[in-house]
Length: 197
Image (tube, rainbow, N blue to C red):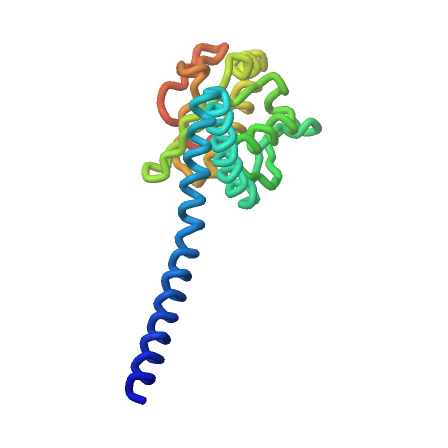
C-alpha cells in the first residue's frame, strides 16, 4: 500500500510539472512570435529600403498628430486687437484660439493683416516673459503701406494681442529674421511692451 501511495504521489507531481512546463511554454510563444515578426520586418526593410522610409514617415506623422491633438484640445479665449472701420480706433474682441497661428488668422480676419501675410515663427520664453515673433516680408510690406498712423495701429494690434495672449511683458518683431523697419524710419530692434493709442 505504501508503494501505491508513493507511486500516486509521483504521478501527481509529474502531472503538475508537465502542466507547469506546458503553461510556461505557452506564455513564451507570443514573445517568440513577436521576435519572429520583428525579424521578418527587418528582413523586408533590408529588401526594400523605401519601405523603411515610409514606416519612419508614418511614425513621425503619428507623433506629430499626437502632439497636435494635444494642442488642439486646449482652446482658450484671448483678446484680438483690430482697427474699427467706423471709428478708426483700435478696439478688441475675444476669440477662441489654440495656438499662435490662430491668433495670426484672427488678425487676418479682422483686416489687420492680409491673407498673404505669413507668420514664420514664434518663440515664447516663459521664464523671461518674452516673445520673439518672426514674419515674412509681405507682412512688413503691409505694415509699411499704411502710413504713420496705420503702421502704429497695425504694430500695436500685433504686439498687444500676442503679449496679452501669452501674458508676456516684451515682444520682438522681426521680418524674415531682421529687425522690423517702418516706412518712417523706426526700427524695432529690442523688445516692445504694450502699446497705448
